[in-house]
Amino acid sequence: MTKDKAFRLGAVLLAAVGTIFATVFFILNCFNTSKSKFYNGYFLFILLIMIATTVYLLRFLLLDKKWSYPRVFVVLALGWSISMQLVMPPISGVDEVSHFYSAYHCSNIMMGMKDHNLGRQYDGTNLWVPQETYFEMRAEDYIYLPTVDITFPYQYQVLADGNWFHCSEEAKQLVPCYEFPAKARRYLVSAVGISIARFLGFGFAGTVFMGRLMNTLMLIFMGWFCLKIIPVGKLQLVSFALFPTILQLCASYSYDNMSILFSMLLLTMCLYYSQDKVKLHAWDLIIIAICVAMLIPNKTVYALFGVWFFMIPIKKWWKDVGLSKKWYEYGILAVILAGIIVVGRKLITSYYWSVYSQIFWKHDGAIEQDDTMVSYTWWYFKDHIPETLKFAWDGIKVDFWYNIKHVIGAEIGHVRLNAQVPVACTIILLICLIVGIVINKGKRIKAWQYVIFGLGFILCLVAIFIGCMVRFTPVEGSERIQISYRYLIPLYMCLSIALGTDAKENKKALALIYIQNIVLIFAMCGTLYFLLHLRDGQPVPAILQIVGIS
Image (cartoon, rainbow, N blue to C red; front, side, top):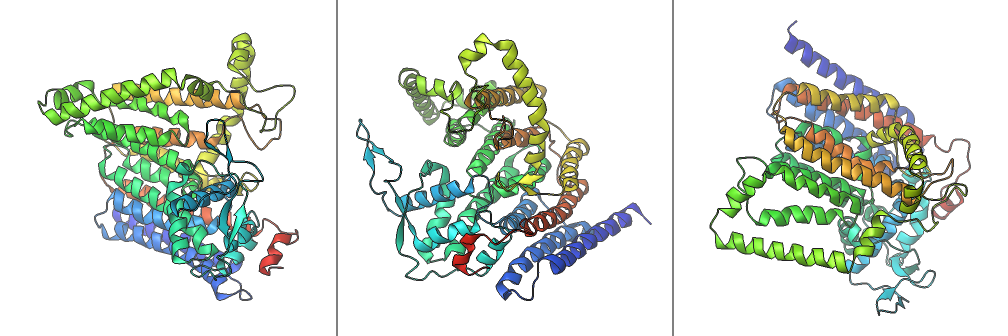
């Protein structure tokens, strides 16, 4: 038997093992003849996605058909993101209850609906007054939301048998919601989905999924675009984007997906413009500035990635723009430089304290604290340097593996849920990523570019660590840990991409993607099993009685 035949036979056997396992699993654990056809169809759709993605990739391996990273990514990201939305339905993401209310509020703004009973500050601006100010929601959305908040496995039935494409006139009546929403600009993408669903008259299930679908489409578009132009790390981008944590965050209402995607886009643009074959223009500065600006509303610390701008050789700007002798290039440069001066002066004169407090800020006590060890401040650090550094080192040792595990997706979802993904699956996914970096031979970025990349990486990592230390020191056993793993995801993702090569599409890369796809089948089934048995031996939550589940 030749190596090629053995390779194809192995691919077929893997497909058979994955699809047969998934089919048997769903028959034994998910399908239920006593439930409605919609309930069983809900799980059948997840199974069909698993089979479809496997057959799609197997076709390339068996027939030696030409494939491309962007096309494969679009198909897999769409399939697995939708699968993740169904396996981890709302509201199971990190802080997703508050994210949904905030996205709904942003949708209200898009639809021209105003808040009610706003207060006024001394400078005349509006003020949200707790328990008095409210925005309005459709009655169905407001009433049904609690029924899908950590009520596994019952929320599968709530959603499957719920209203997807129709909302009665009575259920469309507006009711007040007193939840304080976060900044609307963080939720522009998901709010578009909610607005479309409300405009089309979708029910609660359809509305809540439309918002998440828009975030998924954002992942697909950004990944596709980056894979089209990025010179290195295409395999690593695909591999990392298909980690369970990334799929879950980008299939939820969390605005962490914006931080992840625009960090990836910023690195992509800097690497793209650094190529000799790409001619620079003055307006390219505006594109890079927009990428940095989009990071600020979500997590300000990621603006430090702006250092990666210097991965583009300065002499290239001089050669392509400075010596272009084109008036419009010089005109755009003049406007940009004037803008930098104005913004810089404003930051120094008007927003100095605001920026300062973003870095050296003590939390106001909303997070549970250990009374014997208050939150660190910059002044405390200067007076107790050895003790603070020891505390930091102890925190790194505790948090490092916790964060590594969560970045891949061993535990995903709500802090009070922590849906389990089989550890073996997460290990194999990590191995696939590392193996891809090693065996996918080709040119990597230049050594001096690694230095610039590393500088931005370390600056952001240190800023994250300082930010977490000065904000809170949680008590032992608290839900919050010293460094949130979600802050580190953009760093790990960009690091993986930067370590990649410019290797073109090849069978080794496709084989690694194929293995990852098979592993995701087992990962999703494992997570489903965990969620289906999450409340074994516990009574049905009282809130579900309003939808007739007992």
